[in-house]
Length: 182
Image 1 (tube, rainbow, N blue to C red):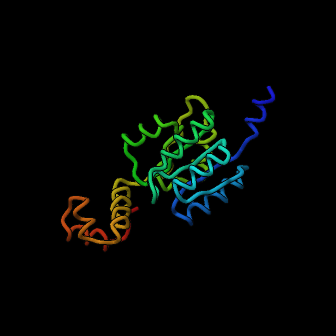
Image 2 (cartoon, rainbow, N blue to C red):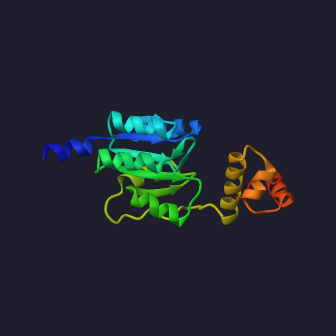
Image 3 (cartoon, one colour):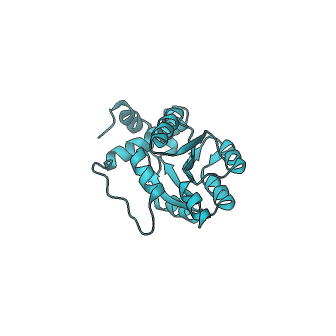
């Protein structure tokens, strides 16, 4: 009985994300919601934090500079099977969501996710299903976000980005010149 009570009081949270401003904002927001937060910016640092003392909760970005965030979730589940981890990503697709759940994540949220959504996912029990967002991103916005992410990953090289997205270079240039859709 004492272990169950201690387990429910354990509000340790590991946040792993390579977007430093987002990481800092999310850490502050989660601390305000009662979590004891530890942060990491790389897979290696996240794995070291898990080995140093596995937290009760984790919020991990899927794609990090030095690897895949699922490695951190997998290590966390090995060290602490009852831990609850969620994956955040800018790329939402069914295959990666299924893989994340198979590796032990309890939820998979698309960026930008706010602290309330993350907190609800971490604290969800049983068959809880999150509510549909009031203003979900439009398909045009999701497309624009994906193009921007690939463009940044290609070092802002228009030709390389166009090749990887299988689109004409001029079409990509027109898209990049426009403002982000709502």
